[in-house]
Every structure is written in structure tokens, then in C-alpha cells.
Image (cartoon, rainbow, N blue to C red; front, side, top):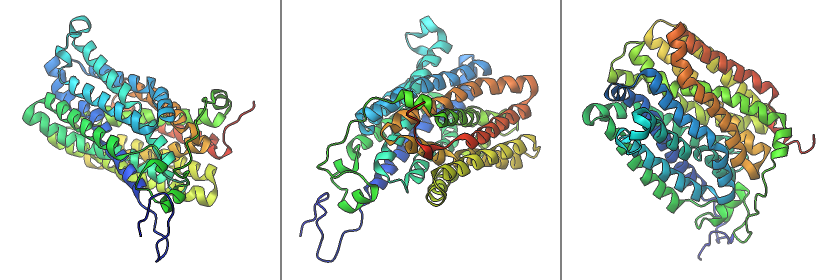
Length: 442
């Protein structure tokens, strides 16, 4: 007997077990996430050769780092809204192609025709800004895809795994980029990253669909487990974004502020951790790159662990407590670990503590992103884009503020400031209640 994917036909020996297409989709999101952070972090490694080669100071390099974050922050909400309207398959495909091309162009940014008008620094700033514009669609559309493809009992774990690609990509990037840079020059690192992104974009386009009902290999059991509509039911339009309801819901603004704190701390690791190890802690180029992977390995482990924990706690204690316990505890432990690492003299112990700080920081990710789906599943892309805008407003400050603080009062104080910001993010979870939903009336 032939079994068709969506009919629910039952074979003679009993019902089929659920298919596992949702995990294939999640694996593709993980691959995109890895590429996203390769393209984001590689410049923090190549900066060691780029700065003397192009005559840039640390402060100017900080401006280049911040240009990416500015473009990324500016387009979070449009990127999420496009995913809600057009679907994550189409939007992610176009976005990955866009930022991969501009990643490759980073290698030749100093020689582009526009350099005559903007100068070397201006040309680099423009290219990095445009990479940020493309990557802005990534995480909100991850959340859009997870909201469509995973049921409430798996969403925290799902977004934790997808965003955990941050850790894998960022862990792989320092040693691989350093090796490519030493052997082939800093430009080659950007060419390789761009080509990898184009490959992943093709895989996503040909293997993914926006919803389980559209995928030929999703059977009835998996569709029921996810809770999606059968193939014969046409998806309902998300309708206009309820901006007034967003504005009336205090939880959204506390969530945005708390995630802004996470963004500030995260970009300290993304932008300056490798150079901190080399220039402040005294590690060599390749050894520093190896140890710079520590925080990102911690992120790889802690991000899905936190997602799993928030799913379990939300099921047992309710959404409000399940999200707040994981979000608040993770940010608090991150603050504590970073503060200890900043004041520890032994380099290896400091690296271990600072790595734990990054791990606990990303332990909270499942709680943050699942909260946006709890608040409004139909507008999860837009709402998560709004939240991630906050993260990148905070993130746009730290690449420039951190070296300024380090120059004025030392690196211990600069890292201590990041710890205090994480502590503030923890305290804000006392006010975040996603299970209460949107406030439609004032």
C-alpha cells in the first residue's frame, strides 16, 4: 500500500511514526546561523593584518565593526516583517545571497570605485553596513520558521539550536580565519566565507518550505505533532502588524531593554575578545585564535541547553515563570562569571571564566525568542525583529565604547562594565511576562 504524506492513510500494521522533516529544517537553520557568524566574526581576526595594511587605528576599526551593527539593527524589523508576509524560505534565500556577496567584497573594499569619494575607511564602513542589512533578516526569520515548524513544547530548544550556530560559527572562525590569513592573506578569508554562504543559500532554497503543510515529506503524524494545518487548508494572512498593541504591552519594552543588555555584552565577545587575548593577555596570533574559541564553544553547549530548560519549565510552571527563571538566571550568572574573569590575573583561568560568561549569556536565548512567539505567533518575525533591534542598539555601542573604556580606565573596567550591563538585563526579567499576551486596550 502506498502511503501519501498528508492524507493520514494508516498502514495495516498501525499508524506511521512522525516524520522528522522539522529537524532537517532546523539543521538548515543551524547551517545558515553558522555562516552568519563566520561572516560576522572573521573581520575581528583579520583586523590584525587589515589595520596596519590599510593604515587604520583601533578606534577606526571599531567604527567599521559598529557599521555592521548599525545596518543590522536598522533592518531587523523590516527583515522580520518580510518573513511574516513572504515566508522565511524566500526571504532567507535572498538575504544569504546578499550578505555573502558583500562579504566577498570586503576583501576589495579599499579598491572599489567608491573609495575615491569615501576613502578606505568609508568604503569599508559602507560594505560592512550592507552586510549588516542582509544579515538583519536572519534571526527574525529563524524565529518565523521555528514558530511554523515546531510545536510549543519544542520551540525553545529549536531556536536554541538554530541560534547556537552562533557558537559553532564563532568558534570555528578564529582558528580557521587565522590559518587562512597567515597562509593566504586576509583577503582570502572573505572570499571563502562568501562562497560558503552562496552554497548554503542554495540548499535552503531547494530543501525548505515555509510551512509543514507545503512539504512533500511531512506525514500526518508529524503535522499533528507540530500542530500545523493540513495541506488542503490555505494559510491565513497575518494581517496588519498590531503596533498599538505592541506599544501598550509593557512586557515587550522590558523584553527589548533586557535583550539590549545581552546585545551589548555579546558584541564585546564578537568584536574584541580575540584582540583582548592577543594584545592584553599576551597570546600569539594562532594560540590566541585557539583560546578565542572558548566563549563560542560555551555558547554552542549552553544555547540549546537553555532552550530545552525553558521549554520544560514553561510546561511545568507556566510560560511566565518558565521564561523568567531561565532568562534571569542566565543573565545573572553571566554577569558574575564576566566580573570574576575580568579581575582574575591567571590568563587561562580568566579565559575559562569569561567563556562561561558567554555561555550563560546565550543560555537565555531560548527564553527571549520563545517569548516573542508566546506574545504573538502570527507576528513572531516582526516582534522578534523589534526585540533584536534592541540587542543591536546595545551591540552598536560596545565595539566603540569598549576600547574607549579600555584606553581610559583599563580592560578590567571595560569588562566589568559589560558585567554590570548583564546584571541589569537579569533584573529586567522581573517585569517580563510573555504568558499574559498582548495588551489590546490601554
